[in-house]
Length: 628
Image (tube, rainbow, N blue to C red; front, side):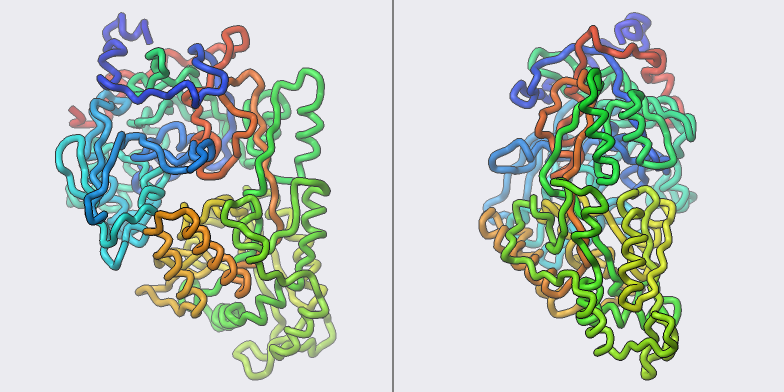
């Protein structure tokens, strides 16, 4: 960057930083203040949709979004705290009014986007009103999560660096968890306003959402790295953001690393393959079938990476679709949904699953075990005594199905629908979908098909490409789905993952057109409890709330858990400031929970950067019309 400053293409660093930058303190750095330079090599397996993240577009996941987005608060490092609470980020401080219904936030002053334009309250209001609350924009959050006491939260601009939140209830502490990545990743108003139909009637919402496609580089970001090169199916290159607004205690601008090289693959499994082969620097070990191989390679002399294991935070479960109105296209769809809504049938499904056997197939050892809870057992909200279990008992399954009127009328081993149903005489066929990107989910399909056939159910597995799978899940267009569950260890952070607090939640019981949905009594109670948790400041009382939710969910088999697992973090040994006990995912994924902006490599171990000539300057942002 010094050469760019000398050439007059970039201002000096003191003009690029805020007058008072955010300082990353030494206690956050297990290996201390670092040195600049070096490369992080990684892999991603989902093509980026575009750079308009405020409008809900994904940037390819696998860490790209975390390296480019910034939000008002940061809950990633909460795992390091004795008493976890969200940390300041773009919002540097805040205070409540006396009645607790107004939250005043003070924003960082002088923070600049990567094109040199200042970040202000206007960006926050644009993100909130023109994306999150706009029903035409499929943003990462919705009105539902911002509704308290029946009132949608109002956001007021006081001045350039001050905003006020006006809530419908007193002190809704849950709101803080919706102010972080990705739900409140702030978008640059000066870039996107001119494309939004609210401000430009010549634009459609589809045009607005897709106005910055993947090839429009570099995007305008606040994060530590800027994407500057993308070759589809090959690579994506990120370089240091020259305007990044954080420093270490010695005043060195972060991040320490110069570049991040992402290889694009067709499967997330390739991230692990690349790490084992020495061409990658990180992976999340979340597919138990590959644990043995990874452990073997990591223990070899000269291995370039190490593995650390988190607690049981990960789970795999079946979603039976409980919606009577979303994704119902035929008599068959309606009949299956009505069947799934019978608790006796959900009990029958649970008794048909040999969880112990499936967990052992996944990995015969200490990293997997059967799962019956709403939360994985590593969650601070989990208590074994709260869990109602319906264990493997195929004879019980057959008994329950017989009580529901199902019989094998032609002797082919598959049950037929009762005569008094719209599908009378037809075989009991259920389709279960899984994402090809979740290898462990796919690996469960054959055992599940066999187990279901053993009790007379023709389970037909369909493996879909991740975007297709996600689209079907979001539309409620499926019978059953197998899902890897990453977010349930901290349920207070993600209430929409466990109860119907909005029309689009939970995924297995979304509302149909016009908000049509018939909630079970136990669901109505879960909604009441989730609403009460949003304003409960006592951690002990909040835990009691979530314990009751777990009792309700497991007793009623709201979903069908299969097994839970410990994930491993595979990380290059040359990287510093990544703690041995860093979780793969608790409050956030690794790159946010142990921010890679403070990762560094000793000079003698650094991989030489190759793309310093692509560090963006004002000339590279000529595509941002009217930005200044």
